[in-house]
Structures are given as C-alpha cells and as structure tokens.
Image (cartoon, rainbow, N blue to C red; front, side, top):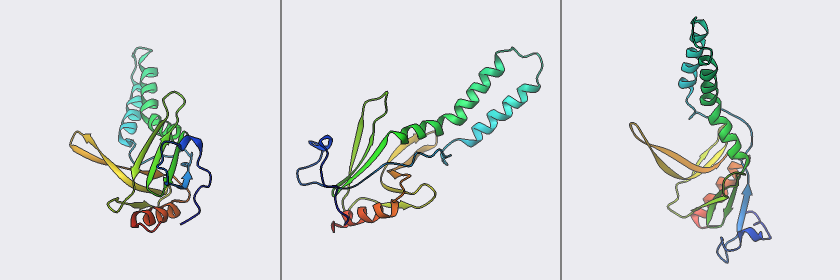
Length: 173
C-alpha cells in the first residue's frame, strides 16, 4: 500500500479513530461535461417548442423570453450545478473507510463516511470520467426505484484508488 499521508490534519481529529490513517486524498476534476443522467429529450422538446413559438404571430411579448429562460435552466442547470458541486468536493480514503465531503460556500460543510470491509461492493468505471464506486442508494421514480452509485467520481488516478480499496477490502492494507 502507498505511504499514508504523514501528518493528520487538525480537521480530522475526532473524526478518525485513533489508529486509523489516511492513505489517499483527492478532488474530482473540475471539467464541465454532459452526464448520461441529464434529460436530453426534455431539452430538445423545449428547443423545438421555442422554435415553434418564433413562428407564431400575435403572442404576448413576455412569452418567448420566459420560455427561453425555462429552457436554458432545464438544459444547462444540471451540468452547471454538478460542476459547481465538484469544485467544492473532496475525497479521502483511510485504511477503513471512504469519505466524500463538500464545502459549498452557501451551505454547511458536509462529510459522509462509508465503511470499507469484505461486504463492500467495489466497482471501477474507466470511462472519460474514471470513478470508483463503493456504495449506492435507491431513488424513487415514477416506475419504481433507480440505483444511484456513490463513489469517487472524475478522479485522475482511479485505477490506483481502486487497487488501494481492493487491498483494504481484502484486509491486506
């Protein structure tokens, strides 16, 4: 296993157990990108609607700007929101658990820990936004439920982090 972060920052005092050590820390890439979960059909339908309204005569003058604003928010809101959240996120892996933290300027600081043990389901997603997933939650939808994976997303050294987590899971750390 790689060298642990030597000096335990004061911010981690009281959060980690006495003999727990940090083995990796990182941040997600801040790049702007379109995620597969964004609702493309809604955006295209909105664009078609706005285009259609350009050709209709006799509309109230406020209708078109309001619809254009709604379209912009629905199409560009999710990726901009995700980019802002990534900018203020940080990841920490210890020899026992994984932490995902956010420190958004207008919201309270948040830190969530996930225990890594033999039952942890690890997944390595090596696409353009390499990620290591180690937990999930279920989100209610109209048709039932949808699984949302939780992990370290958009990290440049995902394969190294996956190897570290595999060692922790197997107890060889």
